[in-house]
Amino acid sequence: MHGEGLNIPQVGVCATTHVASTIEKCMSSFSLPWAIGPLPIIATFWAASVCIATIFNKGKLTGKIFVSSFLFPVGFLAIITQIAFGDNYFSILMIINQACSSLFFVLIFMYLNTVNGNTPLPPIDYKDSELWKSVIVFSLILLVFDVFISSFPIRSPCDTGKCLAVELVIGKKSSIFGSLYFANFIGGILLSGIIISTCRIIQKNRQQKS
Image (cartoon, rainbow, N blue to C red):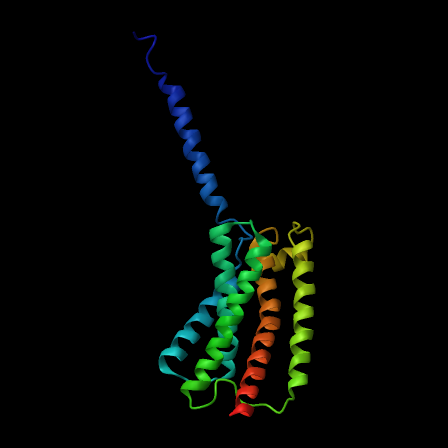
């Protein structure tokens, strides 16, 4: 009976090894560079606080809210995507992120104009043909950009000092977050331009009919 009992030293070694492995996995989560860098996290929290305060107080459309209403969805969606999906489905998630970021920015822009007694989109002296040109140009640039970033994602590991410094600030280059944050930023600007130009065309046509 005693010979078939538990080998206490062996059990102790196994338990110690398991604990050490668990601690190592936990510590690796805090090792630098992080998948999501500190700068986007800080920028996203700052932008969120500005957006929430301005919406509840119905503040005016200033340069600060203009920037924060764009930075908040860009960073927030990229962070959520990294946490929820890891490094999968980059192309589809990129398009969804860009669309949601742009819509959020345009809606905030139009909302703040409206609550301050202005039209959702202040009138500008551009002909319909010029607005259509901007829609077409922005659409072509966005298409080329999205195809390029999907075909050649910036995901290779860093091997230079400058690259490693950027990773420490923005996030690990091999993670989906860095590529998605960059794609959201550039694509969001282009898509916002497309949406606003299209809305201006619709607004002008309605005014002319009335």
